Length: 253
Ligand SMILES: [Fe+2]
Image (cartoon, rainbow, N blue to C red):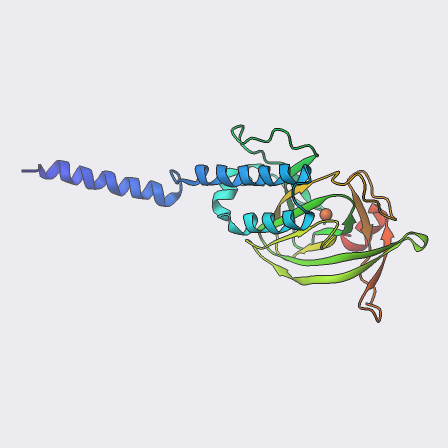
């Protein structure tokens, strides 16, 4: 006969274990997230080695970003600890760089690459810009943004402007991801619509040594623009280039 007391203790133990599992403290997340992180690193390695196209990188990082469990990702990258001190005194973004665990193989990715949190207060912005020779993906992990993206159709160096074709223009929420490259959606502009709005970004820089642009980028591969002109008859926007200071004054005052 089973002793009634030990049965009760046994049930209590199971209940306690269930509580631990449901709180996430002992979830299977690290293994799943290790797999996810390794896929991100492998994808960046393939892009840096030109084994895949820019657009293939965009499609595959979008699948990785939208397929990951956000709560698990936040725990895995220590999001709360890395961002809790951010106070957002201005309308510009603050950043923090998480790290993949040492067990993730990141050896031999032959281009500069990064993973980074971008956070801002309501009304804060990733001010509008285009990039030369880089890719990035932006997964919303908290809050909400008004996101606009643009294809970069042509550089107009004589008039210090870029011809842009507007693409996305809508709210993006946790779990949504956008990406950019030289080939698709090269320009972007995000405005936070909630306090403490954050993206998690993956980027690879210095990609093509042969592809040249009419306009030179700054040390961060960025060219700031004003994309707010009315579209012309071709549906293209003639966007003058701006200095960082001009762009901040206009879009994140
Ligand atoms: Fe960017």
